[in-house]
Image (tube, helix red, strand yellow):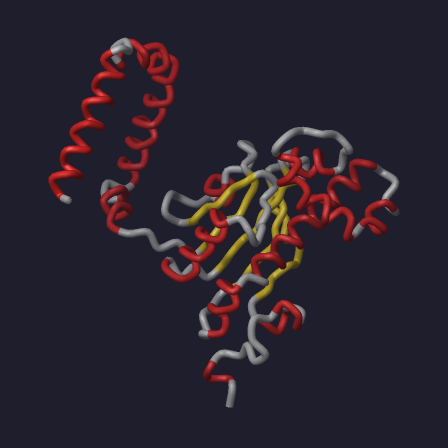
Length: 252
């Protein structure tokens, strides 16, 4: 069996060699792209030098471990960089980003990040942060086919449908847009809390709070939406994974 696998690997290697032998050398394929991106490598070296000038041991310490207290679930929008807008350095915040900062129960990417952050890194705070002017939220407010992303935006349309009466009562389109951005954050905070990952942590007595924030691109300021869930008593009974969600030391 081992000889067969070895032989099969050699055949595969020969095929790869044959195929690549028909192509131009890789340096010729990549030369133009490297020239275009040289400025990014220059920026990186300058950034690394600035960090080392402030703290010579920074990268050595960072490479040894990561122990962030925060998990950031935010939008993929390039104008909303988690570390920078909170004034935090690399290693201070664990980050997950997607279009419109959604937490979908069938999104194993997001759930894997959530589980690792809670069970391995033992973060104490999960921040769901949306932003005003979110393109994903704006697209969900329209009746227009956009392609594959329509299936993702359907989650925001569900939020609109749920709060439709409140939203339609707002005459100003921009205010309605802003309010839906806020409502979307609130729904994603709830979705985080409804996962068994979070509820298991609470059940074990782990210190963990889920926050809802929104970022204003026009002024660069974060806004607390007064959403902070730190225990199962703050979520509806129907979403609780167990009838008694109190930590062991409080069940007597």
